[in-house]
Image 1 (cartoon, one colour):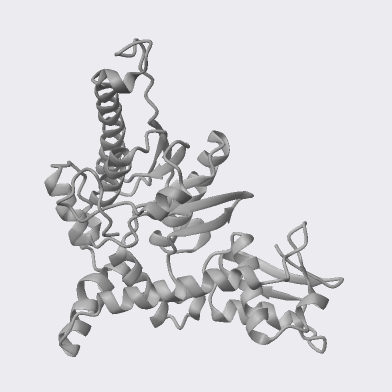
Image 2 (cartoon, rainbow, N blue to C red):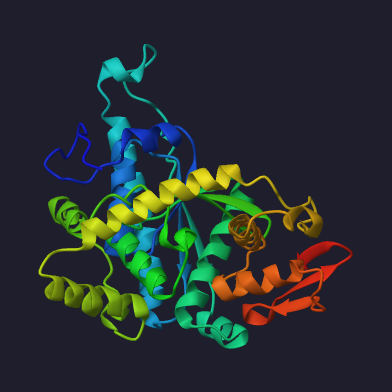
Length: 355
């Protein structure tokens, strides 16, 4: 991410040319903004480099009462301020940039819109028997997918950064994940959510938390503090505040860069492997048993993982994949296996499908 830009050259926070090439600034994109430091910095940075056709998406999780409502109002005000900033820039364009007809436009159209969603995450967690963190994440992505469908815009930018990637790698490592899990977050990733193919772009995945902090201070950006980040109950917070510092103390050296590099290597390899999988599901979303059986165990697992993700199945671990793989055994009398959240995978007439 240390690529020079024409503005804010003293701040080591940038959007890479490769990312801009992949996502041209002239198109419309969604961006998830919680109101916290990272997403506020990303929104400012994107606008700064020329992304002016953005739809800011904010989901009120209703987890912190009035504070959650205040977050939503803050993000809405933030959008208004950015639009005022764009209007001001347009009204003060030099004559040579404004075209031959007029040195100043008579009508200025702003391009940053605001989408607000509200959901009771606690009710979802209770109903689906999942953690608050998992329920909140699922609710966010569902909201993003619904907004993408309505806005006819299938790409969203999220503010995950290098420290998030390191934490995700370690969490998945402790869970016993394979290379797909260790790849963690990817800079560009296609995720299917409720029949919506949503492209997720993470332009800050090579930037560290301290770089974002410096950017926020330099530009004097206001943001909302989330007190829950100090709560050690969520696993991610414990990894960030306790486990990583403990490991570094015991090893006598920093580990973040090494872990980040391992995650990026795994992500690059996973991206290539995804292109090599030759057994896609049928158009109706089913897997063909006869096509899967001759494959190696490794390819069976990867195909099943990719398929379960496409079916919007959450909490896909090794055990879940092995249960689905057991349906390929012609000698097995099992025709149905259980997944998390009361979902099932069934085999019938040579096909495997999710219920």
